[in-house]
Structures are given as C-alpha cells and as structure tokens.
Length: 125
Image (cartoon, rainbow, N blue to C red; front, top):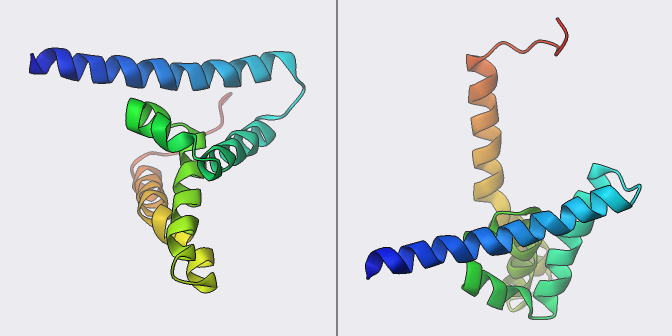
C-alpha cells in the first residue's frame, strides 16, 4: 500500500508541474514575450496566487510539482514576506531573503563547483 501512496504522490506532482509547464509553453508559442518576461510573469503569478490563498492548497496537493517551477519561487518569497510581516516592517522586507537564501546559496555554490570542474567553450568551436 505504501508503494501506491508514493506512486500517487509522484503522479500528482508530475500532473501539476506538467500543467504549469504546459501553460508556459502555450504562452511561449502564442505570444511574443521573451523568456525573461515569462519567468517574471510566472514568479509574480506565484506571489499573487499565494497572496490570494490559492497556491498553498496546490502545494499541499502536489508538493514538488508546485514548488519546483518558478511560480514556486514566487510562493516562497511571498510566504517569507507574510511570515516576516507578522513581526514588523523590516522583517517583512527581509523575510523573503531569509526564506530563499538556502536555495540561492546552493545554486551559487553548485554553479561555482561546476565552473571549476569543467572548461567552458562556445557552442561552435
């Protein structure tokens, strides 16, 4: 039975993450927005959905399927700001930084290690 529960968790995460990616692909295909603008749009959508109380149930349902896409980063920032706002204005401004610091730090360290291990070159050399 535990195998079925784990499998169902994977299915939910894949379905929700895939739906978010499908929406992004539709935006790419049918608009002239640049990839940077689409990333910002999805991050702001995560913030807005969190502020409206709609993203938390999605995270509880899908887990990583909702937190791994860039909209999940917006959710993380909004949650940090809301937690910090309970303590004061300064904490509301620093809360998102504290919430995202572990993930951003891991990305920077891993990128640095990969830059040390591999030699970069142009695509057509």
